Length: 243
Ligand code: GLP
Picture 1 (cartoon, rainbow, N blue to C red):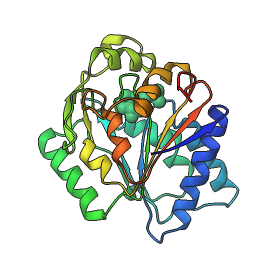
Picture 2: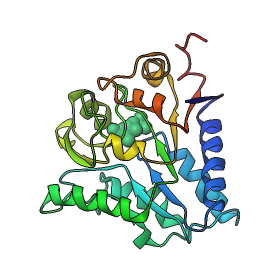
Picture 3: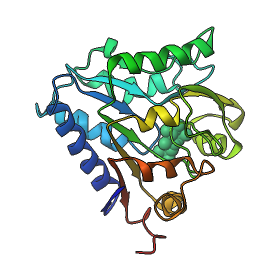
Picture 4: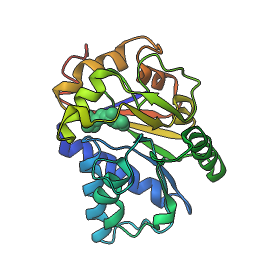
């Protein structure tokens, strides 16, 4: 696992944006794995800026997002489908048919998971997967206790995740209790992974990710075993590290 330390959120976003642009330029048909949450928002802003300045085109890019809430349709402002359109896809020249997120309102969710997994497989490997991290070490929506061999699946969100994500909703009760998420095995099959973390609230999780043991009780710890994973942390997120 490579560790990159940057000053703040802005530097973290700029660093990640450069990697994503390089990855897009290095392939005829790049496949990106994308994340939601506050963490990658700055990255997406930087990518939009680079597109507007003619530094990058998304014409040949295919994307797969990590997850979606069960019960939220793509036009629901709290859905991750909506988030991605609003924060990135609507502002760049990506072909909407090349952007993929799980459908949280599929009538047969089990089948939706299988179909999503198959779609990733048929497209080929994800070249670069962007990740954030939950304060309990979750990646995507793979909560502590998830198996490292999990594929795309329906998961129950734990209370601390519902609490943390309730800031985006009017009431905590509005936060869906379940989600569809790429599994840890699916994520680990990406050729390259960049996990971003900024701010003091992530410091404990970052310490455990970098200095702790590899355990299913802390899902992100599996990244220690990925051949090409980079953890990008700002000063606040790095504040509890030994070195
Ligand atoms: C959610 C998402 C994760 C994300 C995490 C952290 O639970 N499913 O993919 O990494 O929140 O979010 P934030 O970046 O807002 O701290």
